[in-house]
Length: 343
Image 1 (tube, rainbow, N blue to C red):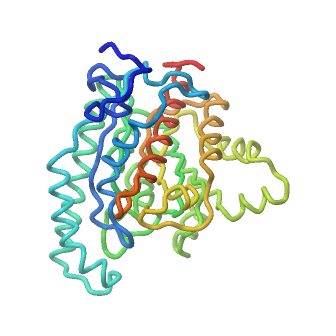
Image 2 (cartoon, rainbow, N blue to C red; image 1 turned 90 degrees about the horizontal axis):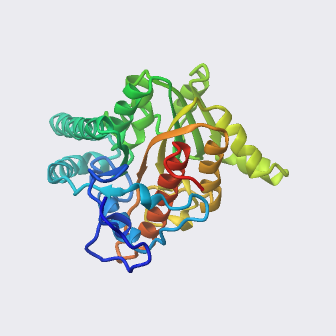
């Protein structure tokens, strides 16, 4: 592995977190997916991977909770030109449909957007599978929350008892939102419909959802367990410690855990430029404590994705800064759970 001085200042031209490692040298391989074709409110998440990359250069690499995750080797792949081109084409086609709220649909354009989204899914699946077969831990960096479907599918093939721990402001259980089969608002609907090896979906921070989504949760026979943000907050106001809530959340998960985290699951002050911010959510400390709780329970985090980070239109780096720091915590606890690094 390439020699590295963790105390040296990060080179702005270096890799993620200022590290010099190649994907082949690294235990953790990050896959940037600059795709946001179906975003229905604010945009900019296609630039999320680059915002996180830039923000990561400001992160100190020694972590009080997880030690030295960087020693395992961390690398981000180059942004895929094909995916960026698919995004640009699909976003242009989708714009009139999104602007009408899905009420005015050009069926030909809709079919093209869905086809381009399927291309993205296939690319993410093939890329994830390639690196999993090389023994890597793979993480997808979106883009909107539609981007990790192929990653989850690949992980579920490797771990047929997979549980998904979903942090989000939204339930993402909408069927073909605004007509888009692979909408960012449909990611967990599609996982539940098309990835049977996902045995359990555990949702945290959910505070924006429709009646049909609530019915899907209610009628899932326990396959979906949603910890609604309002109920979690009310219990804390009544004196229930967050640690006890975390233990209850984690108890619903099987042994192998995949993290699918939308940055808007956090308080909006931490992600003001994300596409669909909602009042409420977890603090940064609570989110990190949730990661720690998974590991404390002896469960194994096998993979992850982080989505919906959007740089500010005014050039604000805050969202990328928070996203990079949350990503490093996700990586660190993933490595600890697998015994790759120790605290």
